[in-house]
Length: 192
Image (cartoon, rainbow, N blue to C red):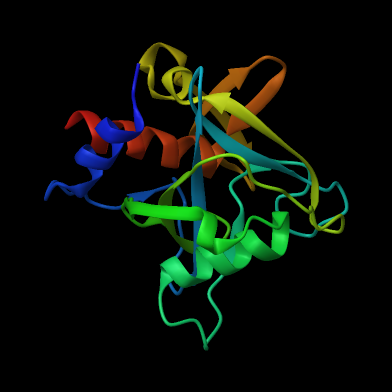
C-alpha cells in the first residue's frame, strides 16, 4: 500500500514521462491546471474528487479534479491549481504540500492540463462552490493505481471513435481525462 513518504520519494526523482493526449486532441489549446489531492488518512492514502454540477457548459456532471483555466495573472500551473482548488472546494492552499507535476494532458475538448499532485493532511474544512461542485468524495489511491482497475472504453463523438480510460468505483464512474491522468500518475510512480 502506498504511503505518503513513498509517494514523496517517487515524485521527487528525475523520472519524467512524455505528455499524454486524448484521441482527437486539438492544437491551440487553452492552458489549465488541476490538483490531484492525495489525502493522508490513517487507513491509507485516498484521492479527493469533485462531482461537477449538472448545469455547467463544460464537463457537466462529470467526476474531475479541482482546477481550471490558467489566468494571465497566474505565475505558474501550480498557482492555478491551488487557486482553483481554493475557489471550488475551499481547500486552503497552505494545507497542500505540492509533491510534483504529472505530464501535460491534452484533451479533445481543447485544454492542455497540467496535473499537480499535492498531499493533504487532515483535519481540513471544505466549502464547496455550489455553482460548480455538486459534491466531493474520496477513493483509495491503491485502487486507482492498480492496473486491474484501469478499463478501456470507447465512444463515438462527432463521428469519430474515441478510446478512453475508466475506473468505476462503488457506483462512481471516473473516466476520460481524469482517469487518463491517474494512469499517468501510476506510470510515473512505477516507471512504466
